[in-house]
Image (cartoon, rainbow, N blue to C red):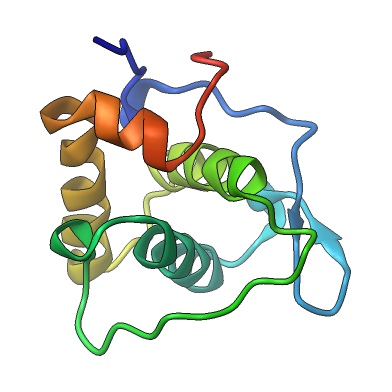
Length: 121
């Protein structure tokens, strides 16, 4: 069994950056909470099986070649960890973030496989 560090206890890699669709790179700590949350939900819903998706009106996207499975997996870990440090999430955002985090405890092997997680730190 995989031993994943839950999102709410994960360290943030201060060097990792999100690449926007226009090619700009952003540190999660510098992104607006609303934008950061929607980025996480978009990546999560595109990588996870249908029964693990969160939110309403789920939209699936095609990601460019830069967005490898490993990169998107790292995005979930880094953005999720950053969001757990925020104090300005709405109630809905908090519930959906907690729902995603609950999957880390419920089915760690599936999460690790789906997100292509190799580094457990």
